[in-house]
Length: 68
Image (cartoon, rainbow, N blue to C red):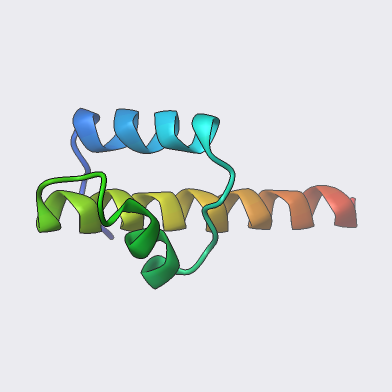
């Protein structure tokens, strides 16, 4: 089981995914992309981790749909 993210992190991550399609499944790349935009290091890391998780889940869903 993982930690539960608050609504601010989820909302921000989803908005960023809608605006920019540069994000990948790699946490460090996502963290660098967010680096200058967010004032707080912990907030940046949480959002980057959540984006990574969303991208990974999206890829797995696509793989399941392709196998059907």
